[in-house]
Amino acid sequence: MKKILIVSALILIPMIAKASCYDIKDNDAKNNCLAMQDKSTHYCYNIKDNDKKNYCLAKVGSSKHYCYSIKDSNMKNECLALVK
Image (cartoon, rainbow, N blue to C red):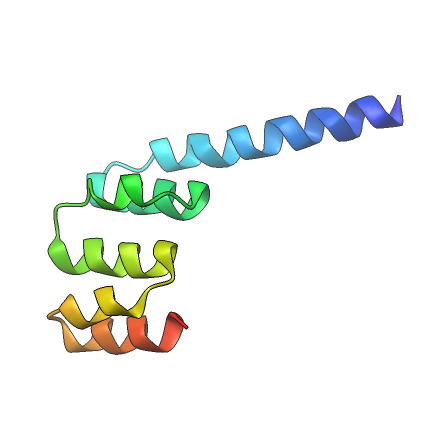
């Protein structure tokens, strides 16, 4: 019985988390949420704001070179500090 509960929890928790991303109204925020959740750059390319797109690509792809394309200096500095 305990094993069934654990397996059920492992299946349901990711589904609940993904559903919460789809509840976000702003498309850029929704795609960012999905990208971080699935660790997939596919969703980053759906973000319209270029700075947010590059931040997403840098974070998901662990690549600092996207940070240098960000025009907003605060976001660029945050990205450079976050991505190793």
